Image (cartoon, rainbow, N blue to C red; front, side, top):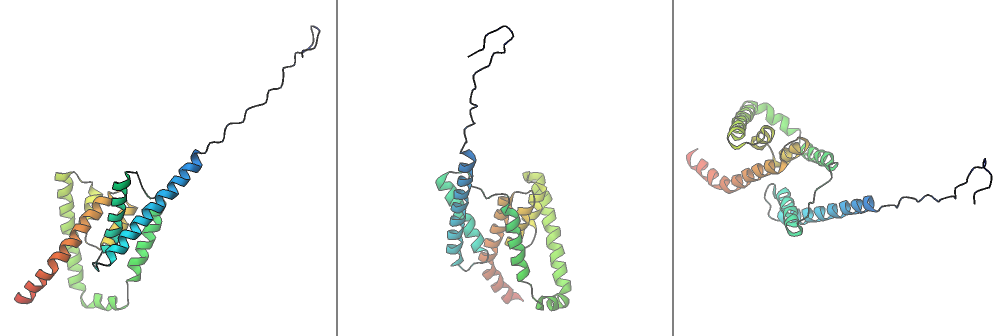
Length: 197
């Protein structure tokens, strides 16, 4: 109640400040990311294990990719791995490639240095020419076109694409197609080479 008198100061009733309601949106987003990550890894693991029974080079990564694609088509959800996983994946790919090195490879490099370097340089030049053509006539990004046409193991090229600002799906499609064609055509090419060489 206000006090009487002209010089008195009117005291206002105390009003309790309302605390902002705690929203559960960040917690739900985190839970949603965890669920999406679990679904992606489960689909990739299932596809990779099924494809590994085929005993085909690169079948594990192809199977994992197809498993996730089928999952996304069935659920129609924008599933995606966190960006932080890109660094981890590149480290794993680097460890995989590095673990395949052996001391015997140095001896082979000395003995076959000329054909190895000649083959590598010619493939890089040919890939660069194809990348220029694909960029000019099909509008493919130059970086994507170069990585897609570069010689190399599919795992290494995919890992490199993950660290660059390129279309990793298109890169993977190029290299998957190359691996499949090599697998299908290799027996016939080897038979022809034995006949004429």
